[in-house]
Length: 551
Picture 1 (cartoon, rainbow, N blue to C red):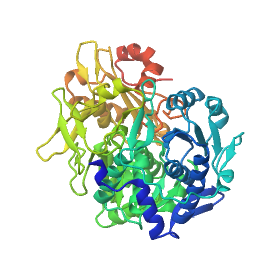
Picture 2: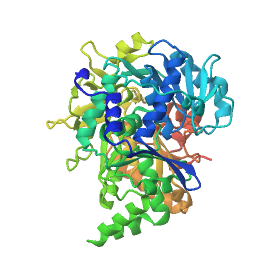
Picture 3: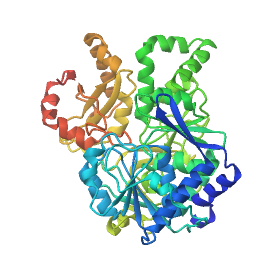
Picture 4: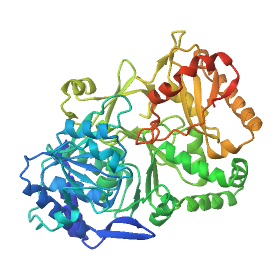
């Protein structure tokens, strides 16, 4: 099945030949300046870098690391690694030195490309001795063995490498929400199967535009941006920084856009910071005018040209989906994981069913185990975990189905609904099991709750830890507490008795990647939340005040 599709390098060479002078990558340089690279320029630079890699005479299939935030030369370096016959190993750009060392040593990396980074001095000590460092055009200050300019002095390779579908393309290390990250191995066949099917599924074209801002080292952005661009020919814009994100978004005016729930919530909170939720709801409810106003809001966000808006990594609360539909933007939820290239399920346009993700993608088989676990099988399924045959055997059944770790169910039309994570389900002191995700989605409807995490392992009843939005933190306490208590009552009314919340705890910290509460893909690290606040759980549970403030 994997060998029946066209492969990534083949698609790149075709794009390069078909429209060499078409702009491919657009990189902001600061002060409003951008660098534009055509398909031909990307090909030329990648071939010269590949020539240098070949000159090292490394064993074929050697692991070459990329340590960088998203930038144009992240993609160029990846192409060069593939052209040279090696395997790319992307690292998250905010790892500690210890984590850098763990990954590079485990992967046995021989070379590391270093690009845009915020704190390279803190990461650099993690590069093992003997690993050759190469600075990309956008790089932090530091000492490197080679520069990108050095590599561009090499004569470009003259051949067009055609790796087989079975040849390993990359090792993607998971974000490590629990324990040591695992190295997920994907071959070119996995990438080809996923990208060819996804591009056809969404009808992406060479006149489309996408903004790359989520980590390229994560499989979702890798597939949605890099692989999608090779198979569709679309133009990739990059975000410069968080401070310039809105300007970058407006520059790109993407026609396809991928976000995680945290991003979609931030957009909503940004709108609410400029206009109270009640006034916005009133304006949107006015016939005809509401539609025009919704477009105006989308235009202000830079999303007015979007044809396909996708959301993944975690469930999106129904209320948030409904909010965007009122603006005129239908979010399509996607479901997948690193181990299957993020390719499993998606909600088709016009087929939204409240509480359900959608149907399985073309080429994906699904079954629900006796334990209620969602199992999937397709040409996107990984080759296994690098150097971890035992964990590979645990993750993939004997007949090739991937164990997702998610509990779920299907309806007669094949729609999938997730009911919780097998590993996230906790047991109260009464011996009852609770799945936190559905409860969190009910609480997330409040327009002042930006983040929420339900905990309760070993407690008589669960608690919900909540982070307020910026507007929520400015709200008069009495008014805010009143609305939150009503939310608590309404939520508990629809929950089973053992699931009902003892209270909402408002914590002062905003959970972020930098303080260790979020993964690089903006998922909440439950273990970090429980570790930070765990000593207070029993006391909070005893107070029974409905809404508590943690100072």
